[in-house]
Length: 289
Ligand code: ADP
Image (cartoon, rainbow, N blue to C red; front, side, top):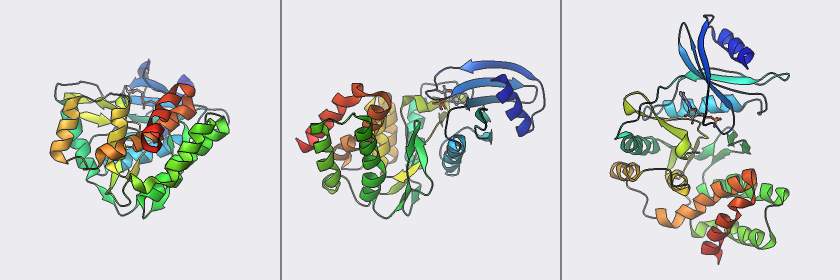
């Protein structure tokens, strides 16, 4: 691993000696490291077993968020692809974590500002990833069509292929997917979304400044983002209060929330198996019966 880190730093143009290197815990997918050289300190992720453009997609997503000038994301210095059995790597700014009592509140305000940054269409030009799963994209005039064809259907089909859709679940999923217009809006604002915002994908930077990491960006209904923040219970109430002060929650938020959580639950069902099946079934029962 040292070899990958060393050669990536060379490619980046930092030829100075590595003074300190240790592994960072907390990532789901990659090996992560703190590395300091005589010139700079870095956060470096490496992986030999990812699709070739995985880190490029991450870098592009961080850049899209950075360009809104609303919320901090780590600056990316360098990324490359896994090739011929050698690991790929992404090198970014090391964010020194220093949480403060108002960090969650600042996150709420800044995320609300980021969500005010809207596109004229839904989706994204490029395909991305959600966790390690492929996330097909494309740009759409209609959010329901995007959510149906690029979000629920691919996960539903994958679940069928993986054998995690029993007969009843499949039946209800088909009904729900064909009637989405009953519950979600066709033309909500096409906000820039982080797209994978669970509690492990934001951190406190220096002076308690909130910072987003590891996005899966998309333009879409901001309720889709907020619904995921609520799914695993990771966000403090100050976050929601500050968000709402800045940009009131959509009036249909409660009706859409579980339909949007369903996507992330299907992703978890596909990645981690039947332990997420019961939550999927509960949502299907509440919409379809
Ligand atoms: P993975 O892609 O494997 O899920 P993450 O990007 O989530 O990895 O990073 C793993 C952990 O490393 C995070 O939970 C966070 O604590 C820490 N981390 C992420 N980015 C930085 C950074 N730029 N500076 C310092 N620590 C970071």
